[in-house]
Image (cartoon, rainbow, N blue to C red):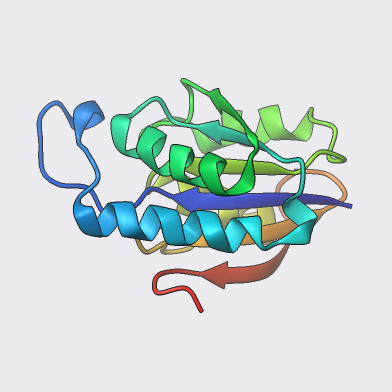
Amino acid sequence: MGWLAVVRHGEAGPGNPDSERRLTQRGEREAHAAGRWLAARPELQGAVVWASPYRRAQQTAQAVVDATRCELVTVDTITPDDDVDALVERLTALDVSRPLIIVSHMPLVGALAGRLVDGSPGAGIAFPTAGAALLEAEVWAAGCASLKAFVGPPYA
């Protein structure tokens, strides 16, 4: 079985261009809390973190990496408007033995978690800022995952 955590970035302030928006102070606290929660999950030990190149996702991913001591990889194709089907196809080709944490944006994170759990194209989950869905599956394909936890700030 494999493990995947899908994480939305922390609260971001306004800005232009969208890709340069930064976390607010609250967003920074949210990102660090998410990182601590993820670090406490034994099933995510040794994970790799994929992060959107957008600044707010990179800031959130860095907080996750600081807490988990995982490797960070920037993935250009997980921005807010990227294709969830292409991402699912990429995930399907992965070896599930290594846990993965994806830090990205709405609507991509909601559509990805919904697709992996429910399988239908219209499925989605509403993520709060710095929300995290923990999924388990034998293969990362549409409808093949189980939602094991769904959390958001404040983390217990």
